[in-house]
Amino acid sequence: MLLRSVSGVRGIVGVDLTPEIAARHAAAFGTMLHGGRVIVASDTRPTGPIIKEAAIAGLLAVGCDVIDIGVAPTPTVPLAVTHFRARAGLAITASHNPIDWNALKFLGSSRAVFPPTMLEKIYRLADTGKLAYKRWDRIGRCSASTAMLDVHIKRIMQFPVIDVGAIRRRQPRVVFDAGGGAAAIYGPTLLERLGCHVQRLYCRPDGTFPRGPEPVPANLRPLGAAVRRSRADVGFAADPDSDRLAIVDEHGRPLGEERTLVLATYWVLSQKPGPVVVNLSTSQAVADVAESFGQRCRTAQVGEINVAMMMKAKRAAIGGEGNGGVIMPALHPGRDALLGMALVLSLLARSDVPISEIDTALPRYFAAKKTLPRPVDWTQRLERFARHFIEKQQDTRDGVKVILPEASIHARHSNTEPIVRIATEARTSREANILLQEAIGALGYRL
Image (cartoon, rainbow, N blue to C red):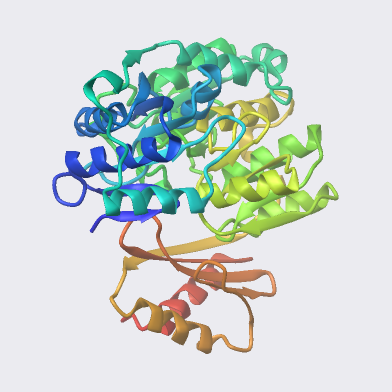
């Protein structure tokens, strides 16, 4: 099943997502833009060249000029849009999805995002076939550039809240796990320029994904072992397109993807107070950190675009998603694992204690999560779930989130896979798991 949402067009290559579908949606994108310059990049998936070339063909056919920046992190694309004064960007990546998936992600500049209404227009154009194909003498031109590695890293190192001096004085020992993804070159290069002693793990950008593509604790055992062996100060892991960051402490223990934004928010607000915006599935710990600095934390629907739009409206200092996605609009309006690393390293470099103690000192909740197949009667099951918790406070902007005293339950369907995500958190692991089992039952799944 081809999935089209605020996260773009996504599917299993050769089954749901074909070169023809990629070309048609890219042509629809170019038609909506009325031509102009478009930046294109991809992650390292084996199907990247097939889908990217098809998408480039679609853009050229409707008169867009394309600059192909090669294999690059998704957050590099909006910076490239601004750098080359382009109209928009297109990232060929299925992010954390399995290796047989790929996707088209439509991006704006470092100052703007495409709202959901623009994405809906792209999908309508693709469906109706009303595409602005040009004559042979009016088609676009394609060129390539390798400049963005230096541009992206330079922008991060010049960012006001990154304490490059402190990091260079500390010279932390870091193990970086790219998972075979797009950050395989970008990540180590940034760390070395910050003065870190870097050990590379899975930094061959061949797209084989030697560990699971999602940087969740279950996939980070090799990283933890490498941190222990090398006696590193911290370990970092990115997903295939480098918009999500996970952290492993000096003992080799994964902190959990939720903690990335908690740590980054603490550092940023200690330097530059301001509002915070997160999605509905993000840990309450971020809001607690914001409150400790006298700042308000607002919530948006799940989806990078939704968070970025609210951040712009509220002039947020920092925000993101609890999956390890850190967003700072002053740099660009998207999640950025490279930025997240620099923020966490700034916090570590300015502290006299290891990363584990910094993390322990910050607000904490225990999470329990489950993904399940999305049934055909999902809407009816979600209504039954809401009735089960009818006496509790609920937020229904994205699925149903039940808000309890110092706990929560969130049930929603994924924007990127044909699955249902159930997430709970509470003050103890036992309570979080009890709530998870209750939620699963309330949704009609067999326990």
